[in-house]
Length: 107
Image (cartoon, rainbow, N blue to C red):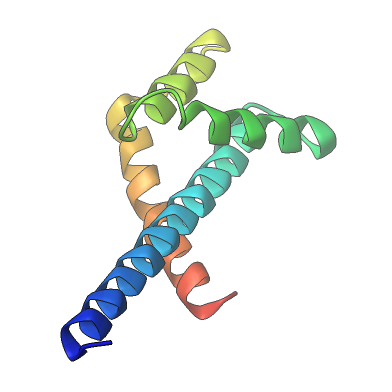
């Protein structure tokens, strides 16, 4: 095997690792977001766990974060909780930082 091939395999392995880490961070952020939103919705125990699962599932609807944002905004509007899309996006950004720290440090 040539040095070039070894370097190429190394770059590919790093790319796969980085993609996996990014996926785990986003999933963790969505889980934390589901806990936050579910708490505001008054959910506890099994209902809260199920709700966080629906937030995680919502992220699979379309690329990007808009699907999660729309789901939570809709859920809030249904029960008349006043949080704008901007507020939800700010919480998403805040929780992304928390999720990065947790995934990277293994907390």
